[in-house]
Image 1 (tube, rainbow, N blue to C red):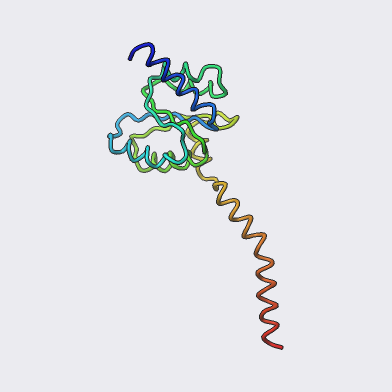
Image 2: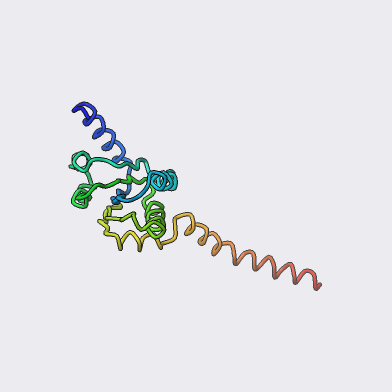
Length: 158
C-alpha cells in the first residue's frame, strides 16, 4: 500500500470515528470469508464501518480521539467495528461469538466506558432503546385501556 493510500485510509477511518458512539475490536482469526460476510451483513445497520485493518494504521486513526484507549487492545490481527449504534453492535457481536467460537471479542469503547469482553456481553443483555420505548408506551397506555374496558363493561350492564 502506497503512502498516499495509507493517508487516505487513515482520513477515512477518522471521518467514521467522528460520528461514532462506539468502537469494538475483534480477532477474526479462523473465521471463513463466508462467516465474515455474515457478520458484516448482521452489523450493517449499526456500524458506519466494519473493517479488517492494519493495527498500525488504526492506531494512527485513533490517536487524539476519544477512542484512543482502544489502540491498546490491538495486539494481534484484528477487525474493527466503528458503531453508530453501540448497543446493537454488542448484541450482534455477543450472539455471533457464541455461535462461532473462532470469533474473539477483545474489547472496545462505547461513549465514556472502556469495555472488556465481559462488559460487552453484559451490555448485550440490556434492552435496546426501541424496546425501552415500547415498554414505556405500554405502561402509559395500559391504565387508559383498562378504564375503557371497565367502562365498556359497565355500559353493557345498564
